[in-house]
Length: 159
Image (tube, rainbow, N blue to C red; front, side, top):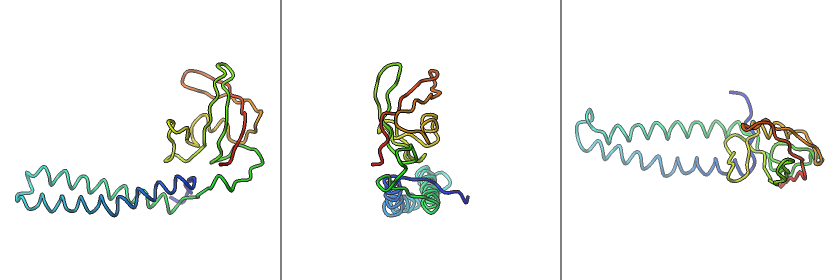
């Protein structure tokens, strides 16, 4: 996997925190749980042991996944961008729905950072794909599940 993984500076910090938590706390607690389950004797019918081993496999898999993503990460700090008003990865875009007049802001982030509740949309989402490369004042059409929607880009910010 030689491809880079785009991450905002904030997203990279979140992944690093999760990795630290897994390595320092979760890994230790699952090792303790395995030791406790082993002390109960027969492992062939020991549900606690099986559950702890499954948890250990999950934790080790997630650690490997996070390490891989972080080693391939292209970390982008939106505050250092100079895209001359163009919508790019990590930019925050203020939009107005032309049908309803509703205004919304989205930051375009990596797949692992996307969280619609926090107005962070994945760079691979239909709305992000429609916005990339556009400027304030442009109107974009987004293929939403409810049908096509038109948005006007009000402002592009790098924060």
